[in-house]
Image (cartoon, rainbow over all chains, first blue to last red; front, side, top):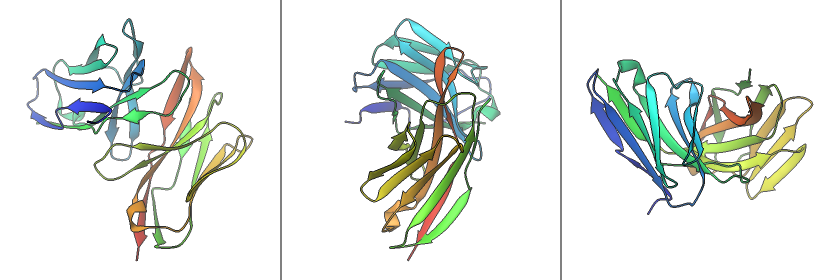
Length: 112
Length: 112
């Protein structure tokens, strides 16, 4: 099994719909992150969490919300999806003192 | 703010050596990462430099000059499987958080 699992892998949804992307990890890492990747823009941070009670906005949090249900689970919600949220979404984890990220396989989201 | 520049695309021949450059301008600096990302897949961690100099890891080496705001990733004995995007990312303090900012990536094509 993958260390960081994202579901679904692909999703097509309509404008205005609520959608949740889920991430779970078996790494035992405290820190979890949500990024989106768009062609020509690189990876941009949406939200991050350093433990279950710690949630922080990243650089592009508008239109998104998150929930850290447990140390191993971090979900991203789009309350009312819009077409410019079409992107590849990655969940990542890291240890406190090991700075490299472990990424999930990604969720390709299309909003029509 | 933080700005990271790397070439958009490069082409190199199987068996050769290629150097992928990254320049950055940041307010503060606490390390530079290189990640490899195959098309449609998750980024995977390659290297982390926090001090000046060269770090060698098998066929891959990474160099850092903090005074010049410059890093490069050196790939030796290129193989077809090295065709991927290579992401440079810089870690720097931002509002009490060690923020990691990604460049847009360099797409490397290895040709026979």
